[in-house]
Amino acid sequence: MSSPKTYLITGTTSGIGLALVQHLLSQSQNVIATGRNIVSRFPSDLVTSHPDNLKLLELDIASPLPHLQSIAAQAWDLFPGGIDVLFNNAGMSAMKPFEEASEEYISQIYTVNLFGPMRLTQAFLPLFRNNRKGVTIAFTSSSSTYTPLPFMSHYSASKSALSTTITSLAKELLPFHISVLAFECGGTVTNLGQPRQSSPSPSPSSSSLLSSPPPPQETPYAQGITSLITMFTRDPPAYMPGSPSKMAKTMVSVINKIQKGEKVPVRLVLGSDAWESVNQNLDETQQVLQEWKHVSWGTDRDGVKGGAEGDYLRAVSIL
Image 1 (tube, rainbow, N blue to C red):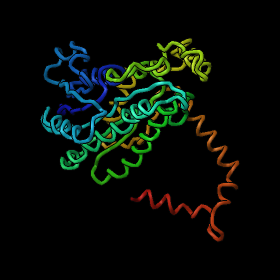
Image 2: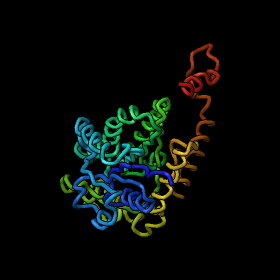
Image 3: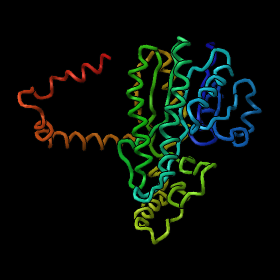
Image 4: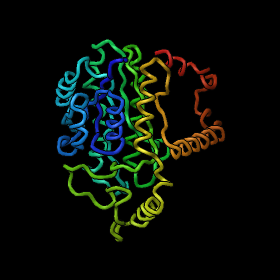
């Protein structure tokens, strides 16, 4: 029997993060479950029933890089052999009209969804490179990178930036045998839309899609937000069909394939709703590209052979 792998997972007190912990423990893997106020918020029954395979570690993904570096060093020694998988799962979602978003709101959502995972990954990379063994860095992203909803522009933009960063990072880390991938998830009923505990009480439009009352009627965008909330609350499974437990099992299965040397995509869409929306987006994008090709190509310098024969893409692919 092979020795257990060690996972460090962020955002483990609920949703997909907690489902990941539960599944991995059922497979006798080692788990470092992290989060804010983790000891008080994490299910105590899991702690008592898995004294050898589960460690809790206080980690606020919004912390500055030096603090995250100290956390990484601490986490590395919690199980023999260091960490095999860093899973950046923590995130937040909210609904807010673009015009009405405060600087605090924008900063918080980008910090939690983008800058925090980037800093934590930075903190672990020297340990991964120096360890000289194949490791995996996984991220929970969103299919909204392809099909953003109205009133969720900041969430979608932060996740889109995350997926783009991951795509580039995967190329950078190939020489070090460090695998990187993003799971771009569709709708899943979790606590993702709930505000961070340390933040001020949010307006109704920045709470969970399923629990938010309509925003004040004097808000110019109230009708649009109310319509969107009503759509989700009328039939949640139709718009959020994802199962956290099934997503967790699939994520671990894909990571196992990577660690066995099998090739998997850097960005993998999870959920039937995600697949359908991304597929539709790609069809529409292809149609627009063909219809407007003459405009796109018409901006090249005179004398340049159209498309540059793919030289740019070939150059990027061999870096």
